[in-house]
Image: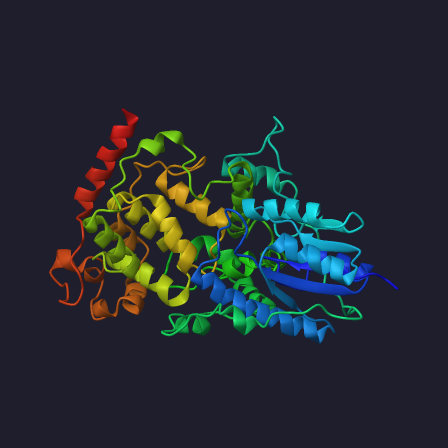
Length: 466
């Protein structure tokens, strides 16, 4: 009798273009397993928004597997121990999984290799990124630290391999291991349900990913032109699907170039490559989410979070009550939908770091908890880029003027949607109602003036330059 194959699932919750599944299905009966692991040392536990997504993604995946004659086994605990136990119980020949590059997952892969019996192989496959992190190297043979040369080098290897379809069927084992019930994990928010707006915007799972790709594909050629306008749906809305592996980046790449060609869609393809770049960064700097890449920022005079005034400023930022309409719109969109337009992510992050002089790590933690696409590599890289602390980052002294950004990118409709107190105001008043004398009583004053904040930030930066 052919021995079973364990399919260890993590952020690769799909059947199509899933190299680990395809290899396992060819080798014998498959036991797909997802472990909710909050026990790994130094593990970044998923935030609330990601857990909401995970619940629905696993539900979708379980249905898809059932349609193929299989099922999804759910367990909670230490991944390496549980996968090894299931492999022993099933008398499995191998464990198949896609490579993951977050430091805790790399440690879990090492631990699993040690925990498996000597006759059980751990076969790790590629497929979560366009190229395996570490495979694109500079002329010196070392990894790239700067994005632009990384993009140029990776582009020489494109397009990626043609995506493989899902298996027509998946053979089942003679007996199934015990499984948890998904509802018992309590991934969804308890009352009050803060995620009611999530379901209005998102359909987690492989079908939802494919629908978003189809909707975006025809517009990708205009991505460079329209991506900075929050009032429009000009972005792909694929980031959470890519993060949870509900669609492969190779599938996205091939669909976009089939529609427009690589040259016409280059701006969007560069955004897709940013995911690969971020993974290369965290492979080089595993603590990128908690430590400055530029050492001199270790002495930066961030405001003290134990100070009640600083705490109040931070709460105002999280709740969208700063008195800056574009910042407030973005933070309210984040809370309501688990997502924020990319241009506004930069504006809100810059505001926290440079206007409020609050350590970028406080913002990174908030985004980690509230974003449905919270990704360790991308989140860490984006925050360090904005703060000027990263290996490849914006200069700290380049301080975004949120009011100017708001007018430049025509955010009036966006503000009306997310800050209803200002819905009756026309442009240009809606961008800065306090300055124009149109601030409604139920909308807060600016918590700090732009000019004052800018000078304070420059003075703080001067202190570490000296």
